[in-house]
Length: 343
Ligand SMILES: [Zn+2]
Image (cartoon, rainbow, N blue to C red):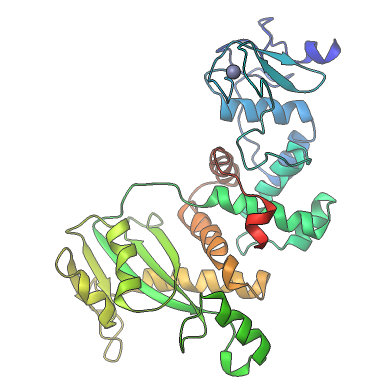
C-alpha cells in the first residue's frame, strides 16, 4: 500500500499507471531532468522507484503501453514493479525492462544506470574489472553489461553524411611479427584477418562540420580492397559529396558518384582543405582507448569497441548527463544474449 502511495504525484494522480500523466519521481516538482555529475547520478539512482520513474519517462513519454499489443489500458502492480495489460493475450505482465538491453537481467536499473553513466562518460573507455569494482558485481557481469551498453551506443541513424567527407582506414592490433603463433592462428581463423594482413582493419568516414561538430562512422572491414572500402562510403555518404582520401587506389572506385579529392602523403599532408587530419585524430582516440583500457581486443568484439568510441566522439559536445540520456534513449529494441556474445 505504501508502495502505491509512492507513485502519486502532487496533483494526486498515480504517476505510473495513469495514462498520459507527467511522470514525476517522488518529491520532485518538475519533470525529470538527468543528473549532472557522477555523484548526483549515484544519489539519484540509488532509489529503485526513481530509476523506474526515469525509465518510464524515457520509454513511454506518452504513457505506459503494453509491449505485446500496444494497449494503454494497463495497471501497475507496485509490489512487483510490473504492469499488467487488461487485454487477453500471453505475456500480459511486463516490466520496464522488456524489449530493452536490460531484459532477462537480474540486475536492478540502479546498477544499469550507473554502468551507463560510467561508460558513456569515460573518455578512454572503462574495463569490466573497473565496472565490477565500482558496482559490486563480478568482472564477468561487468563485461556482459558493457557489451549490452555498447549495443545501445551503436549508431542506429540512417541520416547520411554529406558535404566534405574524409575517408581513411587504420590497422588495429598487435604486431603479428611479435605475436605467439597460436594466437596468430586463432586470429586468422576468426576471419577478420584475411590473407597476409594480420591486423584488424577499421574503415572510417568523417563529415566535416563547424568546430566540434564533425561526425564519424567507422566499421571493421576484412581487407583494404575496393570491394570492402567503398560500400561504407556508398552506404553512409550522400552521392555528389566530396570524398577526401589519401592515394589509396581502392577509393578511386567511387569517382562515378562522388567528387574525389586526393592528398599525396609522400609529398604533403595538407593542401588547402584537402587533408585527412580529422579522421586521423579519431584514429588516435580510438587507439588510445583500445591500448589503454582494453589492451587486447579480440577481433570478434572490435566492432563493438569501435561503436563505443564513435558514440563518444559524435556526442562529445554534450555534457555527461546528456550523453547518459542519449544511451538510455537507445536501449529499446536492442537485445543481446550471452550466447550471441560468446559464440
Ligand atoms: Zn497487451
